[in-house]
Image (cartoon, rainbow, N blue to C red):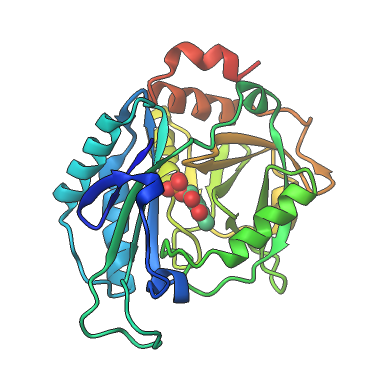
Length: 290
Ligand SMILES: Cc1ncc(COP(=O)(O)O)c(C=O)c1O
């Protein structure tokens, strides 16, 4: 955890420096990824790297490393760490240049890989489920790009913290459409079917969401990708979040509304159990559910 990969070199984290003229700092002109390693096994690394390149293409970032080179450096950093349950954080910005909004002509992108403490929750939280609160959808039109411009997400998560909630979910004030959480996707279960907002430009297509789709397919649960409103969400049989940090987190309260009987539902538990198997924690299933 003490080393980072910065612009081609492995250096101690406390010696890593980024210029005040870095466009990631000045404009939020950069993208990122967060990948979970369980016991040293990287979960869905290829999917995350593919999404990193999709984000890079969407903001026209020059490519400095190939996917294979990035993966190799991630593996090396993980090997150098004594902690093997970590989050791998990758940030790639447009680099250092005198402050001017348009793209610099000759800047080299800044590329960072570092390891973070995982945002994991204790099993009890999964057994009991969590509360989420709504927050106005104040973001731009392209949340499918995983950019470091996270101010609305920061404000939303702070709103959650101040209201004793695990997560804040973005809701369009005009239509009531629920998009996603500040750092997770939100799903609901109605009459045995799993629903999530369609994966268009207005949400991030979570890698964990992709895994949920695969689990549904494998276990014969019908999955429907379509928009739903806040009114539908609070009447759902089950609600849960998916995300690299949240994993598969049952939601039992949305604002002041209790979901069903206030306990994690059976479909959510089935998906969580499959997720635990896929993430090398089959032995922990009974700890995560009642
Ligand atoms: C806004 C947003 N939506 C969804 C997700 C879930 O994505 P993933 O499952 O790839 O972690 C994240 C993860 O950070 C996020 O920031």
